[in-house]
Amino acid sequence: MFGLIKRYLPRGGYFSRLLMVIGVLIAVPLLVLPFCPEDAQYAPSFIAPSALLFALGIVTALPVWKARTKATAEWQAPLLRGSAPVMFAWTVSILAGAIPFVLSGQLNVLHALFESVSGWSTTGLTIMDVTNVPNIFLFHRAFMQYSGGLGFIIIIGIIVHGRQMATLYNAEGHPDGLMPNLKRTSRTIFFIYNSCLALGSILYVLFGMPPFDAICHAMSAISTAGFTTRAGSIGAFDSLPIELVTIALMLIGASNFAVLLLLVKRRFKRVLKTAEVRTMLVLLAIFVPLVALSLAAQSGLSVGQAIRHAAFSVVAMLSTTGYSAMDYAALPAFALGLLLPLMIIGGSTGSTGGGIKLLRAYILFRVTRDNFKKRLSPAHTVTVARYTRPQGDAPLDNELILDTVEFIAAFFGILVVGTLLLTLTAGCSLFDAMFAFMSAFVTVGLPNAITGPHSGAGTLIVEMVGMLLGRLEIFIVFIGAYSGIRALGGRLFKILKKTGGKT
Image 1 (cartoon, one colour):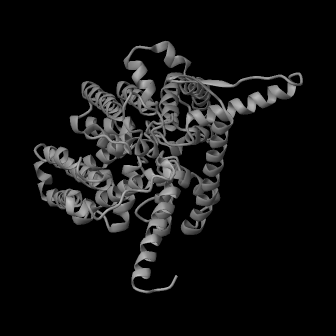
Image 2: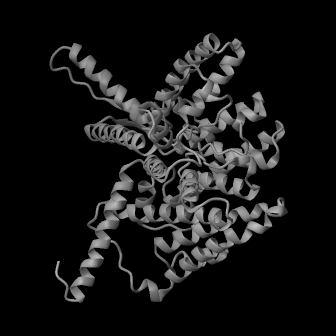
Image 3: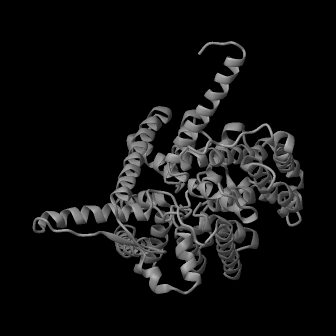
């Protein structure tokens, strides 16, 4: 199968490549059948969508079909050119990921779409009872998160490269190039990602987690997702070593891939100078003690237990993984209130984490601090603001500040609109609606009273939109929708023109 991909990928356009890659990804859960033969009855549910997508990819890559397609106009903005393939990949993957649930009778169509969106977007919200889910579907859920965290464009970039791949790479939310060309960058990211997955799985097994659970939890932790095979999440194992491994995987997943490459190269001084790493360390140093004090004072836990649960909870929220070592509903209101801003901030740019991202939070803090200092400084004082990226120092210019403010404004605007919509669709209180939508929008996936098998269609659709907006960082979704509507409008205009219709 991979030989066919290498043979046909160079021929077809990016849509053909994406179809074939997604087809292969949907078939990966079949690898668990030798170890779970009781799930062989569900094999056709995965084979059917996988074969269909792979066949469509091959057909659309044939010269006869390719000759009928036209390249995207070069005058379009890079993000506009890249948005269509990216949105196409995510749309197809969501539909394909839902099909096995429907064909097997595990879920109805709407619930299957919700589970698929939650998986690919690395959110981790679920409406399934994991205690009654066959292993092949538990693996399918975890693998969707793993693939969604890595990104389709990186997976394609491992095999092929081209001029437009850089545009697609940036459009999917990967701002940093780790190597001189995209193919080497994709392979480097893939190697780091899989090495962490393998190491995490091995450590889980060594500390007493069953191998199947170890692989599924490692995939979810490294992708900062949160799907679990146990009703009690990580807390079901009640193991400090397992929690420490999970914390390490969540921090790795919430870090920029460029920072991880510096760690591999043992350039620790450069890592500690990076703005996002410093921001993460400062937040951990502030919030872990505060949450621990709240737990010790209000929950009756010992100091050691309070620190243990506080460290896990803070990292789970900041990385937007959503794993739990204790019931979040049992947290004191003060401790839960401390965790909410961490959910909003989220992980690093280019990572699998959600939220507004550490770099934007840092820039907002720097702009606020610098403006305050400017008011206290003598007139005509000139300062040049800079910050440290993994690649080195960079100017904190007006364009970057404007982009940051624009994104944060859009983020909170969507949060308000989504919250209000949930109050209508779910008929719940404002706080419950805010918590539920935030859980979906920042891709943290915390369980809540609104989300479940009992949820209405409107509630699930609002949350699905929120999950996609959060994973693809808002603007790519709007630009992709605009691009698709404009392309459809152009096609309809041509049809009407040929048939003599009037516009």
